[in-house]
Image 1 (cartoon, rainbow, N blue to C red):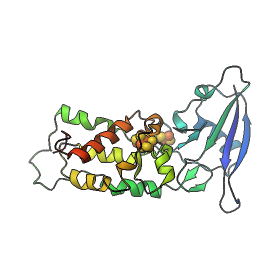
Image 2: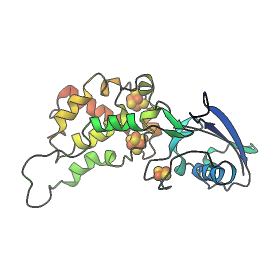
Image 3: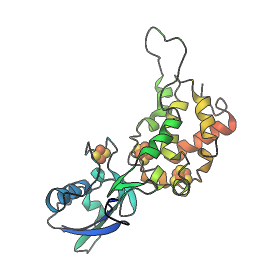
Image 4: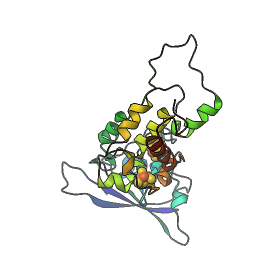
Amino acid sequence: MNVQLGIQRFNPENDAKPYWQSFLITQVDPAERVLDLLKYVKAHVDGTLTFRHSCAHGVCGSDAMRINNLNRLACKTLVQALARPNTERVPIRVQPLLGLPVVKDLVVDMDPFYEHYRSIIPFLVNEQEAPGRERLQSPEERAIIDDGTKCILCACCTTSCPSFWANGRYVGPAAIVQAHRFIFDSRDTGAAERLAVLDRKTGVWRCRTVFNCTEACPRDIDVTRLIGEVKLAIAQGPRRAGRVR
Ligand code: SF4
Ligand code: F3S
Ligand code: FES
């Protein structure tokens, strides 16, 4: 298999604006991943190519990028999944995530993303006296937050959301997923504070139910549903929404 790999390049020290660079890579195994192609270019063609990656197995969330116009993890995107019938060369175009400042090539500045994450108090809050053993949770209570616990903070959701592109002050779907994970945790008592943050102008009401976030999530989290549950908890009050202690 041959691949025509287009990469959006940008070095703020030398370039006035981003530009596309194209690489023909031959004899690619269809089971190789886009991350393998980027590593090949960096090792054998152009050592200045800059991108993030770490685990290479879909766990750390560091290699999220825009691949053929969709947000994906480069380490989970196989070349064969991007192949088109009857084309000699598989066309692959790789860009940095949208909506965050580009630091260099495929690396974006994640600080604004993490600021939103921090704003929703992303840790368990419980100031009641600790029990002698751990705070127990039933399987049913755990199931309610199960989806959100799978989040790897890759930012694929937030950076595919038109509301976030239009206004970077919107906390974005990833922060709401993380908030949901604690708001509906039976051991947590910080729900009211988180819901107040998400009831602001920059909170959940900026979500227009576009569903890009759900489609982009590499962990198959039902992001839009979780956002809907948080909206309901604000509208009806946490207790009436049925899951918040
Ligand atoms: Fe990534 Fe999904 Fe978490 Fe969003 S919800 S940050 S897409 S893992
Ligand atoms: Fe954006 Fe997802 Fe809502 S794409 S508008 S956060 S459903
Ligand atoms: Fe860790 Fe892809 S390198 S998720």
